[in-house]
Length: 531
Image 1 (cartoon, rainbow, N blue to C red):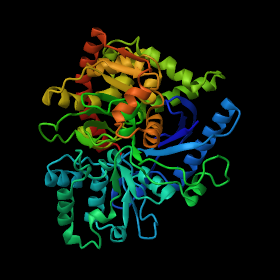
Image 2 (image 1 turned 180 degrees about the horizontal axis):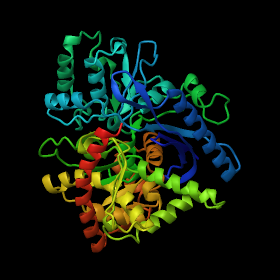
Image 3 (image 1 turned 180 degrees about the vertical axis):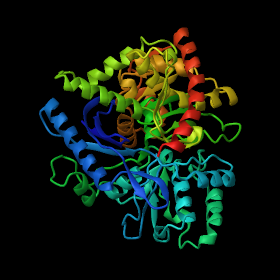
């Protein structure tokens, strides 16, 4: 039996999963990690980053725990590995010189110091370039005169970097590539937009860079294409002590972004389908059969792993503030010598939110840990605001934290449904937020006014989707599309549950939403005054 591995380096944990040819989950392993806010010259407030050494450590620990889980369940080590897939949080900025030396700290999707460059490029390209995209970071670094830019030989994403070190191949999947530079997503091209590449080179010509953009970008590949093979050097990086049965020469599929793996994990790669990935950040994606009517600065246009156009609403802040409050409450519980685990605390608190007042009783919170491009913030100050007579119950407070996490997403979804007129019958939720039964679905449906469905595999999300892409690359039939592979081999037997919002909850969110938008004025004042 062939086993397929999928690994995703997410914002708060690195997770590895093993599946069989039918997509059944065989084993898992994960390792938690966190980004750091470090001081950086010329950037007020610093930058969010991860150390690449920590990425390798997290990757090794995840695979080690996966191997242990597999052996515990089946009494033997891994059998033959059919293929491996690497995924990670999209966007950001990773650059290397001709000797593969890292030139500057990894700048993650969370950084918003690229606002001016993103605006300039959006106008030049006539397409929305979000602040977190790699090309916005590159332009800012060049325009700011950062010394390292003249030495750039290779720019890639986190997934592209890990894949390169494992295989020697400087490639990314087309979904990942569409968060680096604009893609022409159609079956004839499926590559970076050459016209826009020429425009970028012209825009920075005054800085006399010794490279052209095309020469430093990773090549783009679609799902199903060969992504290279694991080298002996790559194997040493993930298994220096040969504890696993992964062998040199094992094939890898093209590395993909967490947006693409989310589409695969929810079977929403076909036009008319949509999903929400909810964790540290949140993004909703709708696969389109045609381009949007106009450019919206709040809406990204990316691609599925096969190259179909996708409209994406991405918000930097989702559960980070909520998690901070849960951690504080958990520390109080533990101080009382309780044996409750943190997962149980989450379930208890989430369930409490269902019993709060529909509009949270007048309470409003703003969950901005970091900047939020959707509403024009470059920094965050988490806030709790209430009237003197607000019922500050645990139920209202937890409900407000959850509604706050959804409010910014709602602003972006309103653009697609009200301005673009896109009809959405349901959205499929996945990621850690939807792992707690019912609550996430119910309240998200109230916030967006759209039924929310969750599959049995909702908690596995991206890593499972990446493992499916690895399996597709290895065992697909000639001419079998990704859609056919997923529909016929994987999702024909997976159970799905759908929740629609109660009218009282939907009306309650509308009242909360109006207060939330007003509270953003308080948020802006807090950023200006509290340093």
